Amino acid sequence: MTDKREQPSAQARQRIDKWLFFARLRKSRSLAAKSVEQGDVSVNGQPVRQPSFGLKPGDTVVLSLDRHNLVVKVLLPGTRRGPFEEARMLYEDLTPPPPPKEERNLFEQATRERGAGRPTKRERRETDALHGHHDRSED
Picture 1: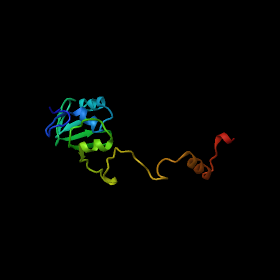
Picture 2: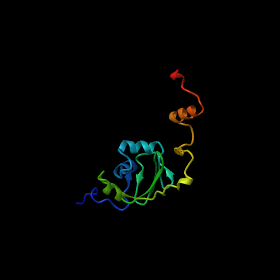
Picture 3: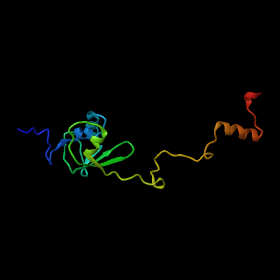
Picture 4: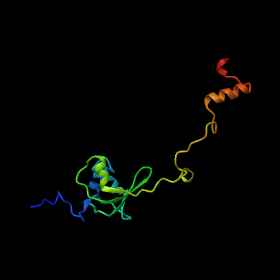
């Protein structure tokens, strides 16, 4: 007699929360379930809100993370949460590369060139000394 758990069929379905955990896309199964319930996961373009949703090989999963979206194609159902190399075989990463620096969103962290913007305390003291102003605490 053959045990079905040892050899998953080609159309085997697996709970999406378990698969996200086994694929190491979430740190724990409860965090995976919470991500699904919050609407951070969609499968084949359809939002999924139930952690018990059945995922099958060939499905495309979009996972919204803090700073970007992760797009993966399911290749295999998981059997355990193994090392990264084993988990990486469960999916194919289809995430597009980040846009060039010129095209990035304006809401990302702003940086400024050195010397631009508000002066530092040291620079302000040097400017005051050039203008002949002195520090009142020196009197």
